[in-house]
Length: 181
Ligand SMILES: [Mg+2]
Image (cartoon, rainbow, N blue to C red; front, top):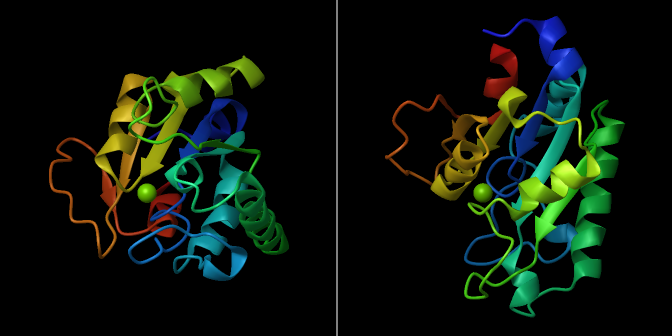
């Protein structure tokens, strides 16, 4: 267990969005603020995480943009609402990184590739990925974290039952993870 002073001074937490912070939209993409619903406890989790970590980032694949199902402006509207609610509840997110690319585009910036990690490094050169957690609900999140040498944490929700996460700590929610720190 890493002590709280060390976490506060030096550690970052990287969060996937859909399935970690909010409910994945059934059969598709969250396209507008009204389709965004926080998962139980995730707002309070940000309150805790904000007091624990030096940096809090989101890294999210948003292929709906590449598919033309939503625009970057709509994504920004969703994030503005999300950040507002998190702030109202005493939490914060320092920066959101997203990849709009289609999975079929080569090369692309999607997890598990490290393009978003490179974007982070460019903007925040002091970040040490070996002093970072990656919290996600899919294997691609775990591979991204592993590729960047982060500590991985898996959130097992109702509709993801990915089994092959041996040697990775598994929690039922972001709040459950935050409470262990
Ligand atoms: Mg996810």
